[in-house]
Image (tube, rainbow, N blue to C red; front, side, top):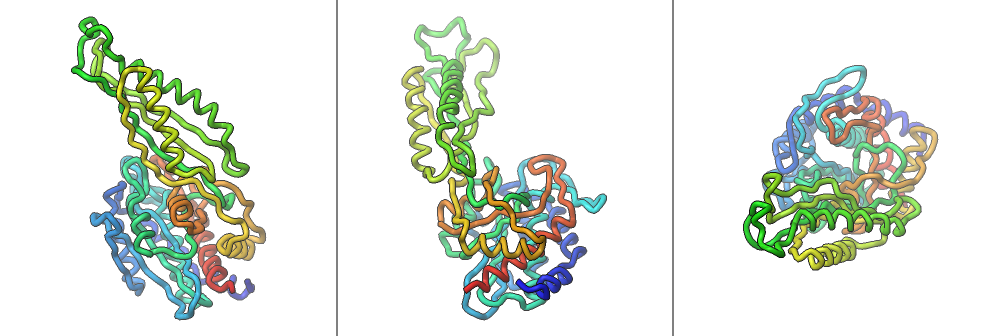
Length: 391
């Protein structure tokens, strides 16, 4: 990658334009399943910039995805910049700028990153820098669990609205994650027949759903220790976790239902189906031992995956990062699950999560340094040049 291109990209990234884009997006509240207004705002911004915008329902007509393409007009691969517009269900915090830092709901997770990716798209068009192929820019709803279920990304995959590689500007600046654990959010509902009853009026032999819940929690705790034996050199080990146990309406009532909620995470190469089957077996054993019925909602947020370290996308990113910073990023694991897990594990599309070194995701104190957003815009533009230009 030559110095002239690096200089052109660096000079063409417009810090103020990027910031104004991020503020405009953050200013529209968009909790998961209600990101339609934010998608409309993004469409308006792209249209005003002169991009042709497509909207696709993608299994969620309440907030059709936003799609724009920058095409070089020459045959070549497609690099996708993909981001989610939805936020966790916390009170809305409006955007503000203090000490060269952008604050507000989704400034870190991830409208700040989306604005940076869009700025990269603008720069590529201005410089006519794509040597071949195209860049596909997409944004959608239905990311944040447990409210979202990844349906729009899965619909995009089914409909072919995807690239040959995907960049996701989530709040992870280092390392470069080439592997990640899968994640499912579970809710086990333990039930018995009959009606709620005062503790002293329980018929003999009435199953105790609270005791069954406690037994399940203990079984999952023990299983978690066993799961540590399933390990991966980059991402760590399998786990299961319980974060919520609830039952009953009053202290001396025997309830009919008990709820246990938590997570199950797993390392590659295990499949989501195998993991769910194993989990269901644990629940079945607990139900048989306690005389209860146990149903489970096992919502897979994304599967486990690993990307080849010598892949085209990894090589292109490292080339861009080295040109910009003087060094490549160390390879590592992604600590969280994002839409890249779906692309990689379910569609076999290499997906790299790289975004600003931002803080406060899933809190009321999200913050993204503006210079980090500028840096991401530059590295995305340079990655696209390298990815689309490789033979």
